[in-house]
Image (cartoon, rainbow, N blue to C red; front, side):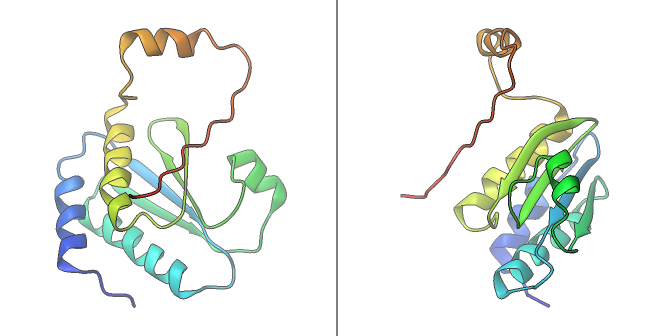
Length: 141
């Protein structure tokens, strides 16, 4: 088992305190584990232990093209963040280091059912009629 640092556990505990609604993290991991996926899984398991509102489902089987396509998973490892409905949020990579706070903010936003977009931006998004694939890439500086 991979041990978390005190800083990681504190960030998880404070980031997930008093979530208003349940969130399910569906972790799609390769069927051949690695040290990176073990660390990622340890973080997700710590999140599920930290809040009774966070539920973790681990899918560690072979790649199932139909299942992954239906869920919008392009590659593994991936984390689908689901609230009362599937928001379409898919997280690729390990939510650690600088990304841990961002990932916890995503979980909180899904739990609260909010996008963080202002009224004008929500109106523009509502006007989009064709499917859109959007990827946000983050690299710490």
